[in-house]
Amino acid sequence: MAIVETLGFDCKDNTYDLLSLLCILETLHRKIRSNLFEPSLPNTRNKLYEVLKTIKEKGG
Image (cartoon, rainbow, N blue to C red; front, side, top):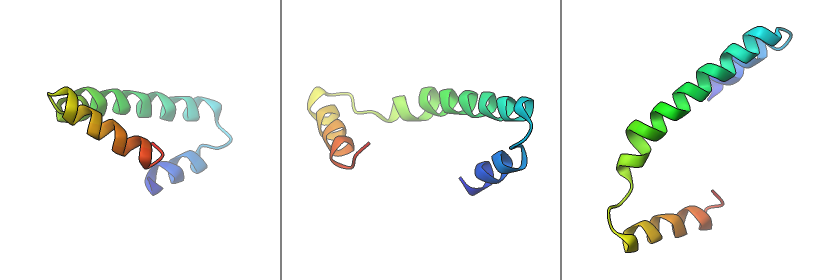
């Protein structure tokens, strides 16, 4: 996370570089969600409920 913040700070006065960084982050977010997060979700309704309950309790 610190690396991304540093990159953002380094680009702070350059709209195009910031937009490029945001596009890269969005692409990375989609890949992590699709390839890692979604497959890690439980198959059953009860287990999925437990995961969602835990996420909600932690404020996510």
